[in-house]
Amino acid sequence: MKKIFYILACLGLTASAQVVDQNFVGKPADKACHYNTAAKVDKGSEFIVISKKDTRLYVYGTAKGDTLLLAKYPVCLSKNKGQKERRGDMKTPSSPAGKPFSISQIQDASSWKHDFKDGRGNIKAYGNWFMRLVTPGHSGIGIHGSTNNEASVPGRASEGCIRLRDNDIIDLKTRYARKGMKVTILDEDTAHLPFEPRIHAKAK
Image (tube, rainbow, N blue to C red):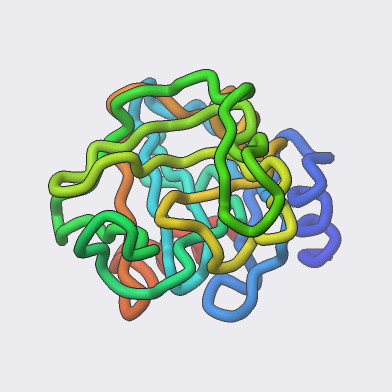
């Protein structure tokens, strides 16, 4: 029965599922999933945690003081692993412990193009939205879609940004994202924050 509810949640077919990600520590399914969809989450409490190790973006929020897992999206991160040091090093920055990044802008990126120097030329590459992050010491980092590059999600192929599938960036923006939202990006050797396994287990 648990497997049935998990499949329904990933397909978005249940409005009140409170389902644990069965593969939280293993190899998560490649579909976006929503959890605790019937909960009345405290307004403005949502925050994002991105795991480089999992290549997943998790959305959390609080309801009556209790932290809940709200959603999970597969992501594509930087081609190279490790902490970002300089522009062009093809690395995604990790946020310092206790100092999350934040979304400074949510921009319409539907017409934005980029040349990946792979022979395809200047092509659409960002989906509908670019969620620009405040990443002290670095600029130009954001969460966006993956037009013409959806096969890279989940995986490691970006120049430093966080790619979602085009439908998922629309979903993230519509359901959760807002200016000022906190975003924690974890290093490859930090699988999860201390509270995360408990929160996922509680979603059973």
